[in-house]
Length: 120
Image (tube, rainbow, N blue to C red; front, side):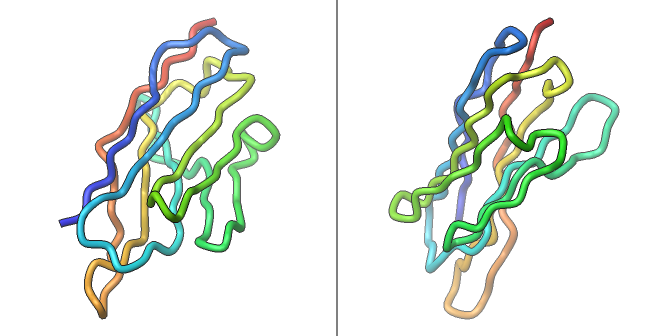
């Protein structure tokens, strides 16, 4: 059984910074892409950033230049450094990983979510 556990959310003032972490554990053969998504109240879940195993990144236009995604493959961990936070960044942030959990299968796994609240 694979688990993704997020940490690092909280309350911060506009202009501040937070760093989210997400560690994968369990029976893991390999991990392809990992990413962060967010869901604000009354809105659909949206992509924030993704990173491939070799390190190629992709960002939502709304966070480009402010957020940085990175990963430590040895620790099966993905990070999201969030700078210059805005009230509109307030949401529950979810970690996602495409994980090989048997010799033949990859599955999408999600973390439980961590709340990020940015006050104006």
